[in-house]
Length: 172
Image (cartoon, rainbow, N blue to C red; front, side, top):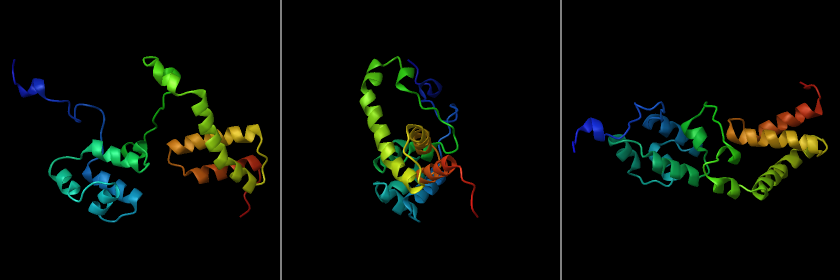
């Protein structure tokens, strides 16, 4: 069996269409989300060691460690690795290859997610003196889940939709 590098080489990023952020982009995003001003401080905030930056600079970014740290902090991997990319989120019914996925994503879990969303939505409706009708809640629940996947801050999205539901012209 040949040890020819062309045959045994793992697939590199240049061959795939995926373009992960380089070290500089990672550090800028990490500093932005952490509120830190120095690379080492931002990495420490993420739970990584003081030597991480030097190691990544010499070698390459350890995206696995980075993703693990981001998830531990509750930071969206979509936001960090694919900002400005309109990603699609498959539902359980789109994953026929694994029946357990659909079974573990039960209606109870969906109901719990909607209840948590309504707990955030009802105070916004009340603040804008709108009734918590099924129709108003449905619009805001949809907005809630859309905003959580995108770049619109959730309070801003909910406030804007309640203003639209109220159908009052802006009073400048």
